[in-house]
Image 1: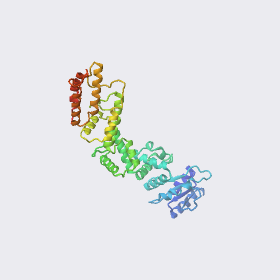
Image 2: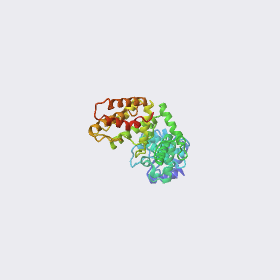
Image 3: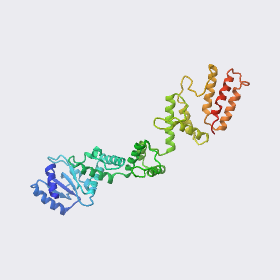
Image 4: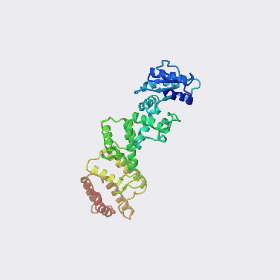
Amino acid sequence: DVAKELAGLHQSLGVKRFEVVPPQPKLTQAVDELLRKLTNGACRATTGSDGASSSIDAVVIAGTNPNYVAVAQEFPRLAHWAPGKKHGYILVAAAAKMHAVTAWRALAIEDLRAEEALQRATVEAGYKDRRLTWEEVPFELRQLVYDRSPKEQAEIAVARGVYALGDNWDSWLGRLAAFRDQHGHVKVRYLATIFGHELGAWVMQQRERWECGTLDDRKVARLKGLGFMLDLEAELFALGLSELRTWVMFHRSRVVPISFTTDAGFALGSWVVEQRTLQRRGRLGLKEQKMLKEAFFMWSPSEAPTSQFDHPQDQEAAVLTRSIEGELRMLRWRPIVERRQFFRSLVLKHHPDVSPDPSAPYAIQFLSDTKEWFLAGH
């Protein structure tokens, strides 16, 4: 039967010489005798050939546990030119799982594109939680499979390579991508699952590995490419800061409503309140405080900024009250003790009995209107 199949390949593909790998002397001798009879000596099968420079048309993977290195060592002979030769083939038995795995492993170590395509296929298989259809298989893998192979057999052959050689981590990355597309985010809770897989536990493991410095940089980059946050506090702060800058520049205002949520679903108003609370409690670093101040004051318009408070109609008085508002806003997130001291100093400074400024009464009225707002919180 083997000889007849090889003779058929001789007729359909023009194969003239088959190399059986790993060496199978007795089997190959029997097949070779029948093959030469069936093809009138035009085709033969060899094994264990030592003629490294001689050309072969196809490698036949045999045995129960074939060696992929032995297969890869035959690639130069497959690529060796011979009259009438157009392609080199690796032949595997459809029912032999390890034959397909061996072929893919040999191709992967020789061709970086095949290795990368297997990685992408592994991610995609994890994303879909099933075997890929032929149309879903990466082009780089499809072009390595004989185009007249039965589609189902071709799919199975690729799937065997993906499941055997693909990194299990890539399958989990595909599941994380599926979770993101289903839920619109990658905030995976510990007990979260996807397709019955414990995704939450895997996510926690990635954070632990990242904290220990054992998570590969490329994997870190791929996780971040999905929007996944490894250092939750630092990355959430960076996201909030970016959204705050966008708000200030777009709305021309430094006041973010507490209920405001961005188009991306980020609760910016609540985040700003949280940062101010952390600052008042002394739990916000100086670096973060500086970046927040810079973000709040990115917009420097030629005219007075939009205010949530009423200012006098009198222009000179309005200049004074807006100046006071600016001072209050700069210190709004300071500890309550400092704010009380500062507020008291402003009252003393602008009190009509002390200040000769004609706008002093307006200043005191403005301070009275803003007192509750400025001294709210701890």
